[in-house]
Length: 268
Image: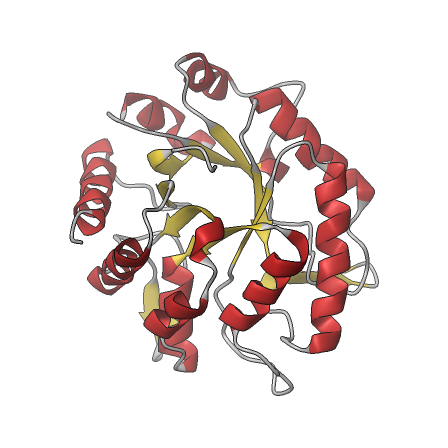
């Protein structure tokens, strides 16, 4: 049974006091690569003392690559989870490096049978290194691989069936893929194994030249909240989290965004 988390926000050092002040925060998420387990930021210690769950969220593991996950990165994720008393660790189903070269972006994994076999082995290695469940997030894509043999929902469904890995569904990423690639977000929701959902990401972005960029620097579009409502019509998500990574607004604006998220969740 996944822990009930409520509505949360991504913790960032630039808004640490804001996060502490926001009312009714159910949980927070911290970028794992940005903290040291042996020297946690005071703000995270304050939140933990209040009983607010803190989830380490990795961005650099790269379970979608051909190379096995780096043991040092896995050890760091495990140490973060232990230091924070986290109920789970989350990462991305993404390709991020090869041959020592960093892509600098969370790239989509080719959805082929061959790639699925590699990802299954990588996920199992990661699970073996962690003392808490691992949840994988769907990524936003600016392109699709021409050799894809499965939809993202099919790929994730088979991955979940083979490994028992949990899911972090980013509805803003579903919206990005709908705008940029013509992939229906509602059809994706209908195909995903939502019974394994741990929590949900919601974020805003910007359109430039007809391409949607998931920047996490703006108010959440109504269309993204509509997808959240569609998800909530299918499953009661254990948690929903607002991501905001730069151009931070006022406390009041962030509180308003959290209220809009709660409203979208209640529309079922």
